[in-house]
Length: 565
Image (spheres, rainbow, N blue to C red):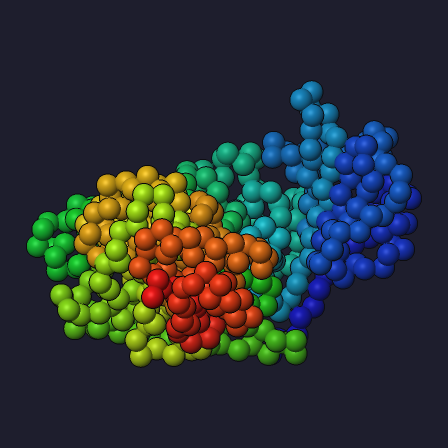
């Protein structure tokens, strides 16, 4: 365990503030949690801490306060950033249309020694490494420490666009150790300075912060192909976010649409048009910063991207640092075998990129282990008598997988034809619930059809055809993610997925609709899962209507089915 030491030189930053604001910051005495100080014209000054935002003064900031700070800083660069000589603090300006500064964000820069130990083995391997995380999570702090560690045995050059890594001024901050620093005159020229560093200074390692433009991504690829180790950062939450970013996807190989031959499509069990990785990744290893003490590592980006595009589970190595500073590494677990076709392929996962996932269809008479089983078609309701919000058929429980321990990796993918339902919302709902869903474009390719109440009432042709073929049809009341999450939870028989927003009146109203549907000709209607108290009330309502009802399933998915007799 490495002992962590923090150097922030906070006095240098507070020295540029107006006296009363400076005194208020010191009075609050929370410098260890201080992230930023916010000064906006016409608003009260605030500080942003790790877990909250605190008002410093009750008075509003005026133009004199803004000028007081600006006059004590170096000139702002083209990216509206300035710094303090030989410190890591960053001051960013907000300007009006005339170019006057009307707001300031003063970010506290800290050199935190000892934070890199959680990924030190990765940067010492000599492979190019990309650090991914949201703003403010500590990417630059890690990058600065990585430069210092690597510079002890390697020739390291830092391409410092905003002087965040090496600090402001011509002399780099001691936190970068023996690493050399190249400053960038304008942010738009960052890619040229990257190439210049390789051509002129013979580095073994190049460190670069915030790769955010297409030219910078191309320059990074050029550097990697010349045999130089790259350590860089980019904004994003996960590898999938990066792949969906057209500007930066080249960092992990990029994606392109490929048309397969009929034979290859049959061999893979996919559509003819699939997504594939365009080229080798620029970075060999990718680290996702999930929090300041929790990291997820993709040790082979090429394998991770290929698996993601084909809809397979991604093997992540989890690294955490506990309160005592001890680091725990959970090795990536091998993906569970996919029994489909006996090839032992990993089971597909959900996500916007799972376009190439195998269909998971079984021969006639078989069942889909993780999806809905085929059932005999229910009788077609009379016009206007449909039960609208209720599923035409209810999926059987997923075979051989206990509900309490089932995960998305143990589920087989289900092809869903969304008729009138937003595909992007359906995919987002599947990702949030954690189930493998593949939206398809043709009803004939689907295992399940989902639609909205308005389309179901009109008895559209795809809905009628699906019911005639015995395909399960689900009807949503609204085109919302919450409705889709509940539909998917019921489809895969997931625990905790039975609660429906709303009160008891809404659920009893559904019961009344179902009773009316049966009285109007339906042979039976199955209500959504409900609590035992609601089911008891539903049985009472059915009995009062001279109908028959029974409860089916196990908690928490036990539900009431209403019959005519």
